[in-house]
Image (tube, rainbow, N blue to C red; front, side, top):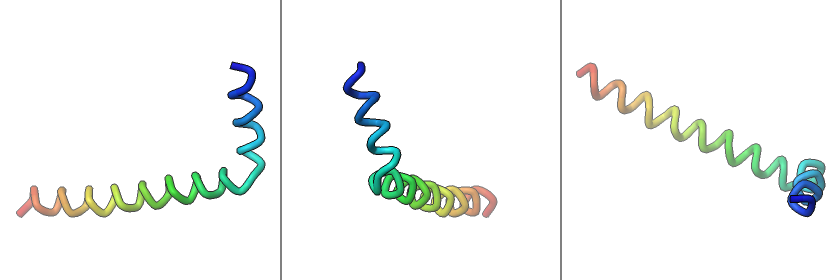
Length: 44
């Protein structure tokens, strides 16, 4: 458990945190696009 916490703390300061954040934002955007497409097909 201790090793994982230290690794996470190190990652949170580094570039990997920004990379993960950008990945999550991109994933959310893709899901939003698919969600809008899916809703638009329901209302047709």
